[in-house]
Length: 344
Ligand SMILES: NC(=O)C1=CN([C@@H]2O[C@H](COP(=O)(O)OP(=O)(O)OC[C@H]3O[C@@H](n4cnc5c(N)ncnc54)[C@H](OP(=O)(O)O)[C@@H]3O)[C@@H](O)[C@H]2O)C=CC1
Ligand SMILES: O=C(O)C1=NCCCC1
Image (cartoon, rainbow, N blue to C red; front, top):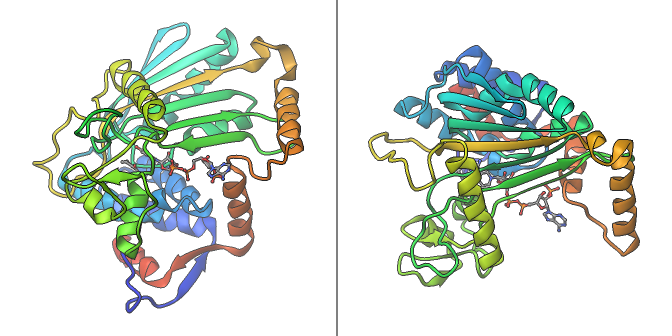
């Protein structure tokens, strides 16, 4: 869905629930079960509502072409295994990661609350979305959550000359007493692959230091990165080390694929990395007693006190409030294409 300027028919607004319903129809019509459609639609609409455009409706054609290619099982039923007091394992059955998390969630929270900490290892799964929706709900319930997911080879490890890692995001959420949970969600690459695609479509150049061309030379041209080039980790060796950690936790520890391990070349249109995801959930009341959210708030006060204007998550929550009040603005052409994918 690439509304070129000459195709654009202006923007239209849709309320959140209507967008969820429309996306549910798209997913179901294109090969998922009703249960999977409901979960993915809410996730994708939530990203659009919060202004996380690289993982909002922009991703729908990728979901649809992937489902059509047979690469992912849109009707997979995850199998949850209660393996140890603090450990839950899920085989996503070559389906999407979010239904696997949903299937294991109650058991995970029960374990985190009783043992103080619990780990969820999801394997055989596809993650094509933003990571914050996976962690933020835990913080809304007073828990601390950390999640990592690996993706597909497109990032050159620091000091190497060819790509190996995925864009491998890390998301963290913690409750705070006086506001929305503290949440950050960041790719360990200098820029998310989705944002490179968006820049290429808009004909925009990237900032310095995001990627290299097919000859390994630094480039600001997003097309050169996408067509034979690669991304760089953020922060040189530091981001590279975090990306390596994500490969180990999300793939080696879960039993999922490393970012370099799967071959989708026989599935034309496949876009969803077939990897793994790890979540760690902590009940802070088992550690420092009941004061964690107040301590978070104190940290926020101190950060504001030294002049910090924007916390991670602030922009998203401000956009969420705007979207809920005024509706979610979508390009008219994009909306028309979504309706067509939903069956008219
Ligand atoms: N499924 C997958 O395999 C992959 C998914 N992704 C997703 O792509 C998305 C985009 O990632 P990325 O481009 O790295 O994200 P950004 O660089 O846009 O943002 C990273 C984090 O930093 C915060 N932030 C940004 N600017 C500031 C600032 N000036 N001051 C304080 N905080 C700030 C953001 O908060 P805020 O949101 O409020 O702006 C966000 O929490 C993520 O949701 C990620 O999960 C990425 C790679 C792979
Ligand atoms: O933006 C990214 O980077 C990715 N998002 C979804 C999965 C592939 C990588």
